[in-house]
Amino acid sequence: MKVYTAKQITEMLQEQDFDINLRTVRYYTQIGIVPALELVGNKRVYTNKHLNYFRAILVLAKTGESLASIQKKLQPLDIEEIKKIGDQAAFFQSHNFLEHETHQVSEDVLITLSPKISAELKQRVINSVSQIIKGDQNK
Image 1 (tube, one colour):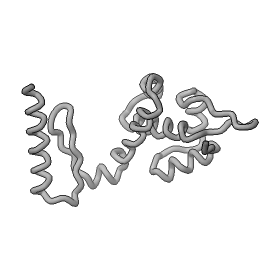
Image 2 (cartoon, rainbow, N blue to C red; image 1 turned 30 degrees about the vertical axis):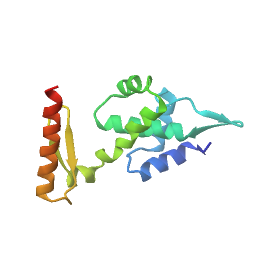
Image 3 (cartoon, one colour; image 1 turned 90 degrees about the horizontal axis):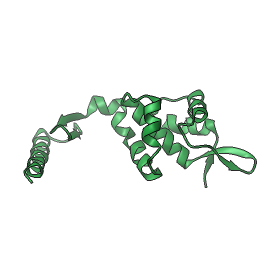
Image 4 (cartoon, one colour; image 1 turned 180 degrees about the vertical axis):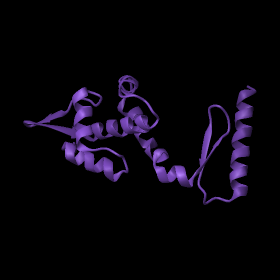
């Protein structure tokens, strides 16, 4: 089991382009939005599980969720679901918002496309997804 200090957790999150500081890491730990620290020997430490929680919290916070709401949403989830939320971080990085184009295909489906693909391919992708959704709605 890999273990970390609060400072190491902060530095890893900052390297992943999350806007967080050591004080916030300690605050989130104190209010219990992340699980209790693990006891290794006589030290309380963070683990990869905690890192996944922090990533998920920061992603949900970018959507405008309050800490209380985030805590409520994360409580029933298993670690795999929490990891999936944290893995969405790339969608919230500012350079992705500025560079990529997002198209709303339906009420429930958004497609984000790289500017590196041609306009023709973008349109084909949008049309294909639209057709799939229409076919799904007709069932």
